[in-house]
Image (tube, rainbow, N blue to C red; front, side):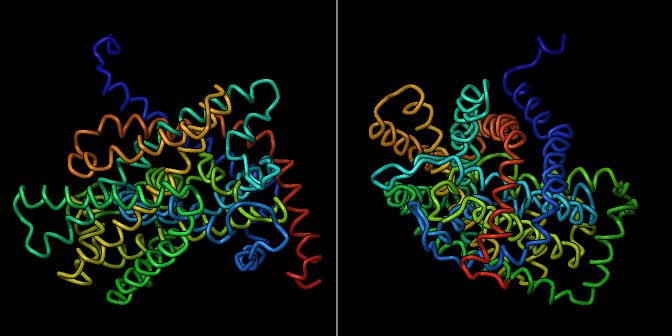
Length: 478
């Protein structure tokens, strides 16, 4: 009877909750654990190789974009609002122990993302004129019998997700970041905030158009400069919070480990946090942040100039490390040492993070966090444009055989249009955001089927790279 009474918006919310619920977390984490065991946890044993690989310039490789620029593009998508609001929400719902389980999730995700990145490079095709045809659906379609159908399903889910979580949600968060800054300089009335958001939306639409019209090369060129800057900006000011509340640092670190395995009491009459909540929300926010297993990043890694598919794995390893172990930890530890997650139980998400930064930087906090939110969201928007374009093209051009140039042009126009209304009228898109969030989670199903099938091959390529290739190129000592 309840199904009959359920409206479409409620149904979408219900399915979205299932998609991002405990079963999905178990499947994603379980796949990551299986990859780790089969690969001997190469992401830990060979982490030094990942560090050396980041210095690789693309020598002797084929592809369209330099390695670091592609890595920055993927980081632009991975490092987003979830690194600030998502981590704060995890602490609000799961307590300090949630950060520990986020780290565990990251270790599993590093290996899983490495396999995805390797498959992207292995399955791509280099055309005679040097162009690349590749991305996640290109390795999914190679699964026997069901692969082509799964690849089409993945492509549809991805370009739907790209419009919501990759476009409109990010446009709204850029405007939110600007609103934080604007309020500091006197924008208080609804009309002033509306005008500010409208101006930001127009500017964002203009600069997004300038970038995406140039395709992946231009997106990567922008990411190459913006991502290191935005990461440094947030890390420096985040560690500043650690220093400000340095007297709580050792206590906070001990709480992370202690309450990962034991219940945590809370102040102010709250019921506290149980271990189950710490595990659930630590894994959920970790997976949402680093996107390991969803199949998003391979849509960019396929275009990297590289000499060996196994090399790309280590860019994936370092990507998840930076996203979750480093940047998410900056947020998490800041909230813990500032004690805001305990003392302000009424706050969650970006509001909790803002309170934490306000305690450290006072009236300058909106500028610091506003700039970080805006940069994180804008780079995510640019990178997800490409993810969506690859899968839009796969569906309409590779599958339905429509002409490529017009379909890419249509996609880029469609991509730009929602930016202004999303920046100004964010709340009106809530149902579509939930729908796209659901599609984002569902992307994992066809991707993980392909990953599970090809994991032995990917691990073989990764081992071939770190056991032989690095010695032949002189990148490691014999």
